[in-house]
Length: 118
Image (tube, rainbow, N blue to C red; front, side, top):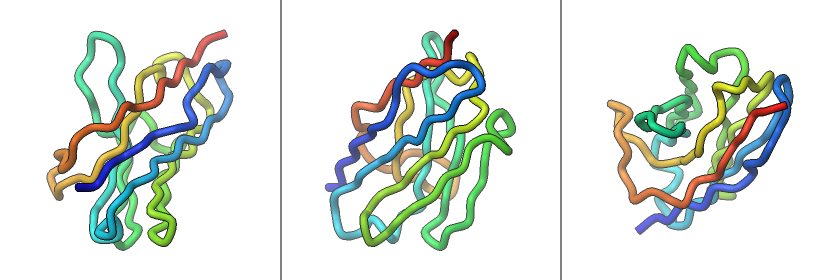
């Protein structure tokens, strides 16, 4: 069973940047498409960025041009570089392996909190 550990969250001012990392255990990591989700208080969890096993990326309109997802299969890691952060980006962020339809495959990790506030 692959386990996921997200790190890198914190408090940042609007316009600032953060880099989130997701470390995955398990030897099949490179076979999975991976995604970053977020969940704001009172809202449903949403997929904001995805990367296929081959490196093709896709983003939600709300983060396009500001967020960049990347992966390192040798290190079993997927990162999310977040620039030009806005207060509406405030949420708990989670990574997961995803199906072609964007549904999560694995149990959720603990997530990492991102707060964008002045």
